[in-house]
Image (cartoon, rainbow, N blue to C red; front, side, top):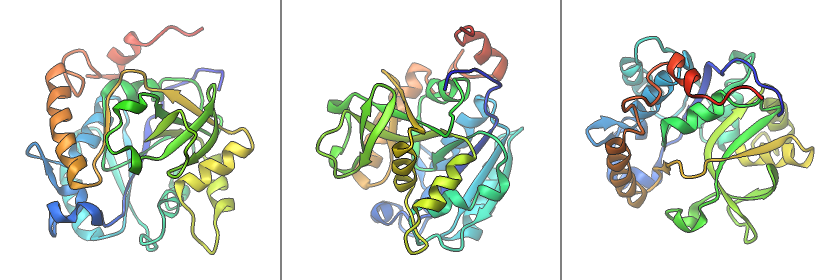
Length: 269
């Protein structure tokens, strides 16, 4: 991860799961469509990608695929091409959903979850940063500020290298934000990580880490939020309103175009 190149323009967004833990709040509505501050949850993701110049989005669907695809297609911002990929094995772990995108992806891509929210600057930092080699995971080292730490995916690092990743880690120094920059090589690690035809995203990261192919990017003071439970949803509403108020999500001067973003980026070393 030493060289700079053109910003990533393709994203893979996982939206295949049922979102069972949030269904007490969402009811029958698929999770990506649940309103957050009056807008479908997935809208924040799509708009953030558009503001950062990502023009192709592969949306991996599963549960209520037809409903999700139809509604999300109506929410696509101008200039964003949405490709819906149905994962017939959506009830398996999320690594299988990532693999569903493999035939569609030829270069580096941003990988993210449809139920995670981010400051625009975090997406900008990843897509304009150094090449991922195999994968670069955005991590949060503000451990004391993590909402529902018990549920978080913990990461143990050595500098910018991933040493271990698991929700059950007791020795960790960072938390997985669910935002990655990947090369197509990561698909190979997911295939190799399969056990009985199934694997998680973390399984692939863990295997890549054993071969020194997994790096981290520290998000510093930037904001992100998982929206996986009713409690997380309430926390997201509060933090999202605050972030919007600060202009960190589509505010003035914050990712309005690729040209503006490029002008704000650090010069090449």
